[in-house]
Length: 386
Image (tube, rainbow, N blue to C red; front, side):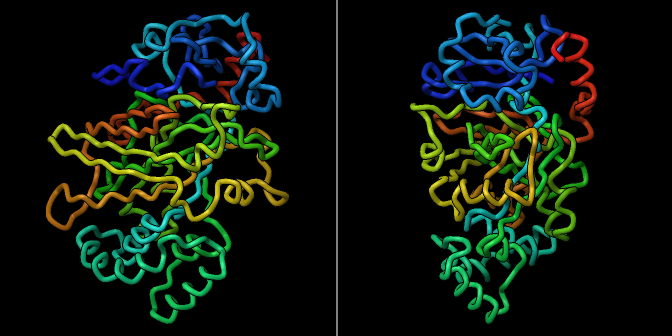
């Protein structure tokens, strides 16, 4: 679904796009189906001859070298032609991969999760609880390394104060929260509408860095993601997490996966600052910043807890790393905090990964997810790619 405000290539690409190895997916009208692609110098090149799926493409150990030297690729059109719909559509850069997420990985969002729990999903109670808990929890959680001896000491202190929470357990304890954000093939890409459950009155975007991880556990690249969240659903009960997180069009990824090479590495991701900009048709605007340096667990530790001898992902994983940005700016009235309105423009960005831009609608009014794994296999077979 195209927004009334069309995107242009230069508005979503990394600032150093000419030096970046950017791979992703498009629906190609010429190819009559989804294709793994390479962005290069304004154009989109078909990588289907190398691998019919993006998950399979990322498994190539020599992928960076092959793409750097590839000269015989077929151009499907320009990026602008996929953004305006004339050549097809820009899709989320994931297909067969599991879509997983780590939660409560930053101190500030940890505090907000405890507030949600205490408020039982009622935004009217959140401000009062925030004022009571922030001075105690905020001072104790900042800069704390999850699973450390210091974290164990803080846990004991907070338990004695009666402030311990299931969110603090996964936030600073030895075991990370890792959950399924969405189903393979269900994510939406840059420029699409994102879905908020129509029964939710307290919800928010979650701007995050998302890692591309192979079946062997290699972290091969990164993209941007919006882990759209329903604070009222999850606040009522942690057992409603799946309903709070996994709805039609509630997971956005893109615009491309930037592969790690000698110009961009995991160390650059660790120093990235992820910006959020929400603009409403009502004139409301909210901005925020999530510095990756403030994360309480390293990306390597999180990936190690995700994929190991106890759990495998044969088609790889796209893995949300969490956010420190939990918006509290009042919108519908004093003390009510932030919630989305229909038509909000949500921009998540960081200079070296580009911009992920989407527009908010209720999940029942977003385009229905109809093209799943079975449809993908049938399409690839019909095109002679399997």
